[in-house]
Amino acid sequence: MADKRIMLISGARPNFMKIAPLLRALDARPGFTTRLVHTGQHYDEDMAQSFFRDLGMRPPDIDLEVGSASHAVQTGRIMILFDELLDREHADLVLVVGDVNSTIACALVAVKRGIPVAHVEAGLRSRDRAMPEEINRILTDSISDLLFTTEESAAPNLRAEGIAAEKIHFAGNVMVDTLFHHRREAAGIPLPAVPEPFALVTLHRPSNVDDPASLQRAVSILADSARTIPLVFPVHPRTAAKLRETGLRETLENTPGVHLLPPANYLTFVRLLLAARVVLTDSGGIQEESTALGIPCITLRENTERPITVSEGTNEVCGLDRKKIATVLADILQGRGKSGRIPKLWDGKAAERIADTLAVYFDERS
Ligand code: UD1
Image (cartoon, rainbow, N blue to C red; front, side, top):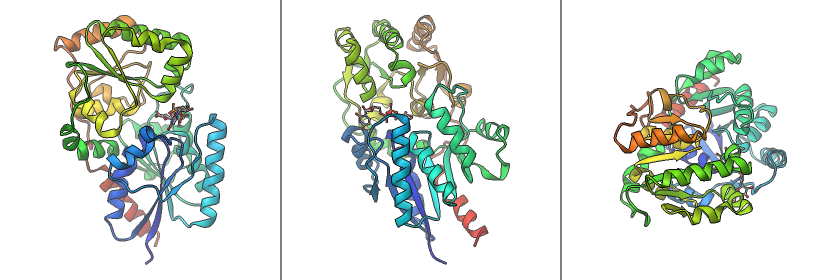
Protein backbone atom coordinates (compact mmCIF):
# COMPACT_ATOMS: atom_id res chain seq x y z
CA MET A 1 0.00 0.00 0.00
CA ALA A 2 1.29 3.49 -0.87
CA ASP A 3 2.33 5.74 1.99
CA LYS A 4 -0.37 8.07 3.28
CA ARG A 5 0.57 11.64 2.57
CA ILE A 6 -0.08 13.90 5.54
CA MET A 7 0.14 17.67 5.18
CA LEU A 8 0.90 19.35 8.49
CA ILE A 9 0.08 23.05 8.73
CA SER A 10 1.99 25.59 10.77
CA GLY A 11 1.08 29.25 10.76
CA ALA A 12 1.85 31.19 13.90
CA ARG A 13 4.29 30.95 16.79
CA PRO A 14 2.26 28.64 19.07
CA ASN A 15 1.84 26.13 16.23
CA PHE A 16 5.49 25.18 15.90
CA MET A 17 5.69 23.49 19.31
CA LYS A 18 2.61 21.42 18.42
CA ILE A 19 3.78 20.39 14.95
CA ALA A 20 7.34 19.38 15.94
CA PRO A 21 6.47 16.18 17.89
CA LEU A 22 3.82 15.18 15.34
CA LEU A 23 6.31 15.47 12.51
CA ARG A 24 8.81 13.40 14.50
CA ALA A 25 6.24 10.71 15.35
CA LEU A 26 4.89 10.42 11.79
CA ASP A 27 8.31 10.52 10.13
CA ALA A 28 9.50 7.69 12.39
CA ARG A 29 6.74 5.33 11.18
CA PRO A 30 6.41 3.35 8.02
CA GLY A 31 3.23 4.09 6.08
CA PHE A 32 3.33 7.88 6.26
CA THR A 33 4.94 10.61 4.16
CA THR A 34 4.80 14.09 5.62
CA ARG A 35 4.73 17.53 4.00
CA LEU A 36 5.29 20.52 6.24
CA VAL A 37 3.36 23.55 4.99
CA HIS A 38 4.04 26.87 6.69
CA THR A 39 1.50 29.54 5.80
CA GLY A 40 3.80 32.42 6.76
CA GLN A 41 1.22 33.96 9.13
CA HIS A 42 4.25 34.55 11.34
CA TYR A 43 7.45 35.20 9.47
CA ASP A 44 10.02 37.10 11.58
CA GLU A 45 13.20 35.36 12.74
CA ASP A 46 12.00 35.83 16.34
CA MET A 47 8.46 34.64 15.68
CA ALA A 48 9.07 31.77 13.25
CA GLN A 49 12.48 30.69 11.88
CA SER A 50 14.22 30.52 15.28
CA PHE A 51 11.51 28.07 16.39
CA PHE A 52 12.20 25.66 13.54
CA ARG A 53 15.86 25.61 14.58
CA ASP A 54 15.25 25.36 18.35
CA LEU A 55 12.74 22.56 17.88
CA GLY A 56 14.99 20.61 15.50
CA MET A 57 12.37 20.75 12.74
CA ARG A 58 13.33 20.76 9.09
CA PRO A 59 12.55 24.06 7.34
CA PRO A 60 9.05 24.02 5.83
CA ASP A 61 8.68 22.02 2.61
CA ILE A 62 6.38 24.79 1.39
CA ASP A 63 6.11 28.37 2.65
CA LEU A 64 2.99 30.20 1.47
CA GLU A 65 4.45 33.53 2.73
CA VAL A 66 1.08 35.16 3.44
CA GLY A 67 2.33 37.66 6.03
CA SER A 68 0.24 39.97 8.21
CA ALA A 69 -3.11 41.50 7.23
CA SER A 70 -6.65 41.86 8.58
CA HIS A 71 -8.31 38.60 9.63
CA ALA A 72 -10.39 38.39 6.46
CA VAL A 73 -7.52 39.19 4.11
CA GLN A 74 -5.06 36.91 5.89
CA THR A 75 -7.53 34.01 6.08
CA GLY A 76 -8.57 34.53 2.45
CA ARG A 77 -4.99 34.65 1.19
CA ILE A 78 -4.10 31.45 3.03
CA MET A 79 -7.17 29.76 1.55
CA ILE A 80 -6.32 30.77 -2.02
CA LEU A 81 -2.65 29.78 -1.76
CA PHE A 82 -3.38 26.50 0.02
CA ASP A 83 -6.06 25.62 -2.54
CA GLU A 84 -3.53 26.22 -5.33
CA LEU A 85 -1.03 24.04 -3.51
CA LEU A 86 -3.57 21.22 -3.34
CA ASP A 87 -4.06 21.55 -7.12
CA ARG A 88 -0.37 20.67 -7.46
CA GLU A 89 0.14 18.25 -4.59
CA HIS A 90 -1.90 15.31 -3.35
CA ALA A 91 -2.76 14.98 0.35
CA ASP A 92 -4.51 12.04 2.05
CA LEU A 93 -5.08 14.09 5.19
CA VAL A 94 -4.52 17.66 6.33
CA LEU A 95 -3.50 18.05 9.97
CA VAL A 96 -4.08 21.41 11.65
CA VAL A 97 -3.27 22.46 15.20
CA GLY A 98 -4.52 25.08 17.63
CA ASP A 99 -6.80 28.00 16.85
CA VAL A 100 -5.05 30.56 14.66
CA ASN A 101 -6.26 31.89 11.30
CA SER A 102 -4.10 29.36 9.44
CA THR A 103 -5.92 26.54 11.29
CA ILE A 104 -9.41 27.38 10.03
CA ALA A 105 -8.21 28.56 6.60
CA CYS A 106 -6.47 25.27 5.72
CA ALA A 107 -9.16 23.09 7.33
CA LEU A 108 -11.86 24.79 5.28
CA VAL A 109 -9.96 24.42 2.00
CA ALA A 110 -9.21 20.74 2.65
CA VAL A 111 -12.72 19.73 3.68
CA LYS A 112 -14.25 21.36 0.60
CA ARG A 113 -11.90 19.33 -1.56
CA GLY A 114 -12.99 16.14 0.21
CA ILE A 115 -9.69 15.71 2.06
CA PRO A 116 -10.05 14.50 5.67
CA VAL A 117 -8.96 16.97 8.34
CA ALA A 118 -7.43 16.16 11.72
CA HIS A 119 -7.58 18.91 14.35
CA VAL A 120 -5.10 18.67 17.19
CA GLU A 121 -6.14 20.62 20.31
CA ALA A 122 -9.85 20.30 19.57
CA GLY A 123 -12.78 21.13 21.85
CA LEU A 124 -11.31 23.96 23.93
CA ARG A 125 -13.88 26.71 24.55
CA SER A 126 -13.53 30.05 26.31
CA ARG A 127 -17.21 30.83 25.51
CA ASP A 128 -16.00 34.30 24.56
CA ARG A 129 -16.87 34.92 20.93
CA ALA A 130 -15.12 38.28 20.95
CA MET A 131 -11.91 36.25 20.95
CA PRO A 132 -10.91 35.55 17.31
CA GLU A 133 -9.47 32.17 18.31
CA GLU A 134 -12.84 31.03 19.72
CA ILE A 135 -14.43 31.44 16.29
CA ASN A 136 -11.51 29.56 14.71
CA ARG A 137 -11.92 26.73 17.25
CA ILE A 138 -15.67 26.30 16.80
CA LEU A 139 -15.48 26.37 13.00
CA THR A 140 -12.46 24.08 12.71
CA ASP A 141 -13.97 21.50 15.07
CA SER A 142 -17.28 21.52 13.22
CA ILE A 143 -15.65 20.44 9.94
CA SER A 144 -12.88 18.12 11.15
CA ASP A 145 -12.97 14.35 10.74
CA LEU A 146 -10.63 13.50 13.60
CA LEU A 147 -10.63 15.64 16.73
CA PHE A 148 -7.71 15.17 19.12
CA THR A 149 -8.29 16.63 22.57
CA THR A 150 -5.84 17.74 25.26
CA GLU A 151 -8.07 17.64 28.32
CA GLU A 152 -11.23 15.89 29.43
CA SER A 153 -13.42 19.02 29.36
CA ALA A 154 -13.10 19.13 25.57
CA ALA A 155 -15.17 16.06 24.63
CA PRO A 156 -18.37 17.29 26.37
CA ASN A 157 -17.93 20.66 24.62
CA LEU A 158 -17.74 18.89 21.26
CA ARG A 159 -20.62 16.52 22.01
CA ALA A 160 -22.78 19.53 22.99
CA GLU A 161 -22.10 20.96 19.52
CA GLY A 162 -23.33 17.74 17.91
CA ILE A 163 -19.97 16.17 17.04
CA ALA A 164 -20.08 12.37 16.95
CA ALA A 165 -18.24 10.62 19.80
CA GLU A 166 -16.35 8.35 17.34
CA LYS A 167 -14.52 11.37 15.90
CA ILE A 168 -13.17 12.48 19.29
CA HIS A 169 -9.86 11.08 20.58
CA PHE A 170 -8.39 12.07 23.93
CA ALA A 171 -4.70 12.18 23.03
CA GLY A 172 -3.08 14.51 25.58
CA ASN A 173 -1.03 17.61 24.97
CA VAL A 174 1.48 17.78 22.12
CA MET A 175 2.84 21.11 23.34
CA VAL A 176 3.80 19.35 26.57
CA ASP A 177 5.55 16.67 24.45
CA THR A 178 7.78 19.45 23.15
CA LEU A 179 8.26 21.04 26.55
CA PHE A 180 9.40 17.77 28.12
CA HIS A 181 11.56 16.92 25.08
CA HIS A 182 13.51 20.20 25.35
CA ARG A 183 13.35 20.88 29.10
CA ARG A 184 16.86 19.65 29.91
CA GLU A 185 18.41 21.34 26.91
CA ALA A 186 16.71 24.64 27.86
CA ALA A 187 17.82 24.31 31.49
CA GLY A 188 21.41 24.08 30.23
CA ILE A 189 21.50 27.34 28.27
CA PRO A 190 22.52 30.60 29.97
CA LEU A 191 19.76 32.67 31.51
CA PRO A 192 19.49 36.09 29.82
CA ALA A 193 20.78 38.91 32.04
CA VAL A 194 17.76 39.36 34.33
CA PRO A 195 17.45 40.03 38.06
CA GLU A 196 16.49 37.03 40.20
CA PRO A 197 13.97 36.21 41.51
CA PHE A 198 11.65 37.55 38.82
CA ALA A 199 8.15 37.24 37.44
CA LEU A 200 7.83 36.43 33.72
CA VAL A 201 5.24 38.49 31.82
CA THR A 202 3.67 37.98 28.39
CA LEU A 203 0.83 39.99 26.93
CA HIS A 204 -0.51 39.98 23.38
CA ARG A 205 -4.27 39.26 23.31
CA PRO A 206 -6.12 41.91 21.28
CA SER A 207 -8.57 42.28 24.21
CA ASN A 208 -5.69 43.46 26.42
CA VAL A 209 -3.44 45.34 24.04
CA ASP A 210 -5.55 46.72 21.16
CA ASP A 211 -7.81 48.91 23.30
CA PRO A 212 -5.69 51.77 24.74
CA ALA A 213 -7.72 51.85 28.00
CA SER A 214 -7.13 48.12 28.62
CA LEU A 215 -3.47 48.45 27.73
CA GLN A 216 -3.15 51.41 30.11
CA ARG A 217 -4.76 49.31 32.84
CA ALA A 218 -2.45 46.36 32.15
CA VAL A 219 0.60 48.63 32.24
CA SER A 220 -0.44 50.13 35.54
CA ILE A 221 -1.02 46.63 37.01
CA LEU A 222 2.47 45.68 35.85
CA ALA A 223 3.88 48.79 37.53
CA ASP A 224 2.11 47.77 40.78
CA SER A 225 3.44 44.21 40.51
CA ALA A 226 6.99 45.41 39.82
CA ARG A 227 7.01 46.95 43.29
CA THR A 228 6.88 43.44 44.78
CA ILE A 229 9.05 41.48 42.32
CA PRO A 230 11.06 42.46 39.20
CA LEU A 231 9.25 41.71 35.94
CA VAL A 232 10.86 40.22 32.84
CA PHE A 233 8.69 40.95 29.80
CA PRO A 234 9.54 39.66 26.28
CA VAL A 235 7.31 41.90 24.15
CA HIS A 236 5.23 40.43 21.29
CA PRO A 237 5.29 42.54 18.07
CA ARG A 238 1.56 43.32 18.33
CA THR A 239 2.10 44.61 21.86
CA ALA A 240 5.27 46.48 20.91
CA ALA A 241 3.36 48.37 18.22
CA LYS A 242 0.51 49.26 20.60
CA LEU A 243 2.89 50.35 23.36
CA ARG A 244 4.67 52.64 20.92
CA GLU A 245 1.41 54.10 19.52
CA THR A 246 0.09 54.92 23.00
CA GLY A 247 3.37 56.21 24.45
CA LEU A 248 3.12 53.49 27.11
CA ARG A 249 6.43 51.95 26.09
CA GLU A 250 8.19 54.91 27.66
CA THR A 251 6.12 54.51 30.81
CA LEU A 252 7.16 50.87 31.11
CA GLU A 253 10.79 51.62 30.29
CA ASN A 254 10.83 54.18 33.10
CA THR A 255 9.15 51.90 35.63
CA PRO A 256 11.70 50.54 38.11
CA GLY A 257 11.78 46.75 38.14
CA VAL A 258 10.43 46.29 34.59
CA HIS A 259 12.82 44.63 32.12
CA LEU A 260 11.64 44.61 28.51
CA LEU A 261 13.10 42.05 26.10
CA PRO A 262 12.50 41.29 22.42
CA PRO A 263 10.34 38.19 21.69
CA ALA A 264 12.23 35.15 23.01
CA ASN A 265 13.06 32.12 20.91
CA TYR A 266 11.70 28.80 22.21
CA LEU A 267 14.64 27.58 24.29
CA THR A 268 15.26 31.00 25.82
CA PHE A 269 11.60 31.26 26.72
CA VAL A 270 11.59 27.85 28.42
CA ARG A 271 14.81 28.85 30.22
CA LEU A 272 13.04 31.97 31.52
CA LEU A 273 9.97 29.93 32.45
CA LEU A 274 12.05 27.43 34.43
CA ALA A 275 13.70 30.26 36.36
CA ALA A 276 10.55 32.32 36.96
CA ARG A 277 9.00 32.56 40.41
CA VAL A 278 5.60 33.21 38.81
CA VAL A 279 4.18 33.91 35.35
CA LEU A 280 1.70 36.66 34.44
CA THR A 281 0.26 35.97 31.00
CA ASP A 282 -2.69 36.14 28.62
CA SER A 283 -1.36 33.28 26.46
CA GLY A 284 -3.23 29.96 26.33
CA GLY A 285 -0.09 27.95 25.71
CA ILE A 286 1.80 29.45 28.63
CA GLN A 287 -1.05 28.64 31.01
CA GLU A 288 -0.51 25.00 30.00
CA GLU A 289 3.29 25.12 30.09
CA SER A 290 3.30 26.60 33.60
CA THR A 291 0.88 23.90 34.78
CA ALA A 292 3.09 21.20 33.24
CA LEU A 293 6.16 22.64 35.02
CA GLY A 294 4.38 23.39 38.32
CA ILE A 295 5.11 27.13 38.09
CA PRO A 296 2.44 29.48 39.49
CA CYS A 297 0.49 31.29 36.76
CA ILE A 298 -1.68 34.40 36.95
CA THR A 299 -3.83 34.68 33.84
CA LEU A 300 -4.57 38.25 32.76
CA ARG A 301 -7.85 37.33 31.08
CA GLU A 302 -11.47 37.02 32.16
CA ASN A 303 -11.72 33.38 31.09
CA THR A 304 -9.73 30.41 29.92
CA GLU A 305 -10.47 27.78 27.28
CA ARG A 306 -8.10 25.46 29.19
CA PRO A 307 -9.99 24.91 32.48
CA ILE A 308 -7.82 21.99 33.57
CA THR A 309 -4.98 24.47 34.21
CA VAL A 310 -7.24 25.94 36.92
CA SER A 311 -8.93 22.79 38.28
CA GLU A 312 -5.72 20.75 38.43
CA GLY A 313 -2.88 23.08 37.55
CA THR A 314 -1.26 26.19 38.94
CA ASN A 315 -3.37 28.71 37.03
CA GLU A 316 -5.50 31.47 38.58
CA VAL A 317 -7.66 33.49 36.20
CA CYS A 318 -7.60 37.12 37.37
CA GLY A 319 -8.59 39.29 34.38
CA LEU A 320 -7.25 42.81 34.80
CA ASP A 321 -8.52 42.95 38.38
CA ARG A 322 -5.85 44.97 40.16
CA LYS A 323 -6.81 43.88 43.68
CA LYS A 324 -7.14 40.20 42.87
CA ILE A 325 -3.81 40.14 41.04
CA ALA A 326 -2.07 41.87 43.97
CA THR A 327 -3.54 39.35 46.45
CA VAL A 328 -2.74 36.27 44.36
CA LEU A 329 0.77 37.55 43.63
CA ALA A 330 1.46 38.27 47.30
CA ASP A 331 0.24 34.77 48.25
CA ILE A 332 2.52 33.18 45.67
CA LEU A 333 5.54 35.22 46.75
CA GLN A 334 4.91 34.27 50.38
CA GLY A 335 4.79 30.58 49.45
CA ARG A 336 1.01 30.31 49.88
CA GLY A 337 0.28 29.93 46.17
CA LYS A 338 -1.76 27.16 44.69
CA SER A 339 0.07 23.93 44.02
CA GLY A 340 -1.02 21.83 41.10
CA ARG A 341 -0.60 18.43 39.52
CA ILE A 342 0.15 17.45 35.96
CA PRO A 343 -3.07 16.67 34.06
CA LYS A 344 -3.83 13.25 32.62
CA LEU A 345 -1.94 12.35 29.41
CA TRP A 346 0.34 15.38 29.61
CA ASP A 347 3.14 12.85 29.59
CA GLY A 348 5.25 13.58 26.51
CA LYS A 349 3.58 10.87 24.40
CA ALA A 350 0.58 12.64 22.88
CA ALA A 351 2.02 12.77 19.36
CA GLU A 352 2.68 9.01 19.46
CA ARG A 353 -0.96 8.41 20.39
CA ILE A 354 -2.11 10.65 17.54
CA ALA A 355 0.11 8.79 15.07
CA ASP A 356 -1.34 5.47 16.36
CA THR A 357 -4.88 6.73 15.82
CA LEU A 358 -4.07 7.97 12.31
CA ALA A 359 -2.59 4.56 11.44
CA VAL A 360 -5.81 2.85 12.60
CA TYR A 361 -7.92 5.42 10.73
CA PHE A 362 -6.19 4.63 7.43
CA ASP A 363 -6.14 0.86 8.12
CA GLU A 364 -9.89 0.85 8.60
CA ARG A 365 -10.32 2.59 5.26
CA SER A 366 -7.90 0.52 3.18
C1 UD1 B 1 -1.70 35.24 16.38
C2 UD1 B 1 -2.90 34.33 16.68
C3 UD1 B 1 -3.02 34.12 18.17
C4 UD1 B 1 -1.72 33.63 18.77
C5 UD1 B 1 -0.61 34.59 18.39
C6 UD1 B 1 0.72 34.15 18.93
C7 UD1 B 1 -4.84 34.49 15.17
C8 UD1 B 1 -6.21 35.00 15.03
N1 UD1 B 1 -4.14 34.94 16.21
O1 UD1 B 1 -1.97 36.49 16.96
O2 UD1 B 1 -4.03 33.16 18.42
O3 UD1 B 1 -1.86 33.56 20.17
O4 UD1 B 1 -0.55 34.66 16.96
O5 UD1 B 1 1.71 35.09 18.60
O6 UD1 B 1 -4.42 33.70 14.35
N2 UD1 B 1 3.98 40.47 13.43
C9 UD1 B 1 5.33 40.64 13.25
N3 UD1 B 1 6.06 39.54 12.90
C10 UD1 B 1 5.53 38.32 12.73
C11 UD1 B 1 4.15 38.16 12.91
C12 UD1 B 1 3.38 39.24 13.26
O7 UD1 B 1 5.85 41.72 13.41
O8 UD1 B 1 6.28 37.38 12.41
C13 UD1 B 1 3.17 41.66 13.82
C14 UD1 B 1 2.43 42.26 12.67
O9 UD1 B 1 2.45 43.63 12.82
C15 UD1 B 1 1.03 41.77 12.85
C16 UD1 B 1 0.93 41.62 14.38
O10 UD1 B 1 2.24 41.25 14.80
O11 UD1 B 1 0.09 42.63 12.32
C17 UD1 B 1 -0.04 40.59 14.82
O12 UD1 B 1 0.22 39.34 14.19
P1 UD1 B 1 -1.02 38.35 13.85
O13 UD1 B 1 -0.51 37.07 13.32
O14 UD1 B 1 -2.03 39.10 13.04
O15 UD1 B 1 -1.70 38.15 15.24
P2 UD1 B 1 -1.09 37.76 16.64
O16 UD1 B 1 -1.47 38.82 17.59
O17 UD1 B 1 0.36 37.39 16.56
